[in-house]
Length: 72
Image 1 (cartoon, rainbow, N blue to C red):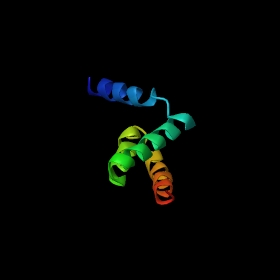
Image 2 (image 1 turned 45 degrees about the horizontal axis):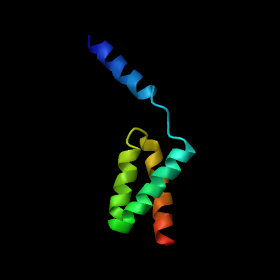
Image 3 (image 1 turned 90 degrees about the horizontal axis):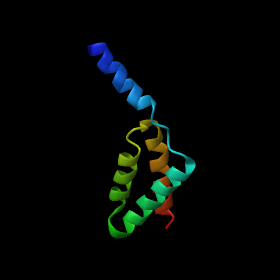
C-alpha cells in the first residue's frame, strides 16, 4: 500500500508540464506589477510560489526579476 502511495505522488508531479516561456514572462510581469503596490519582496514571493512545482527554475527567474527591478 505504501509503495502505491509513493507511485501516485510521483505520477502527479511528473504529469505537470513545465511552464512555457510565455508563462514565465507573464509571471515576471505580474511580479513587476506587484512591486508597484508592494515592495520587491512581494514580487519575489509571487515568483517563488508560482514556480514551487519547478524549484530548478526559481533562481533564474528571481535573477531576471531582480535585474528588471534594478533597471527601473
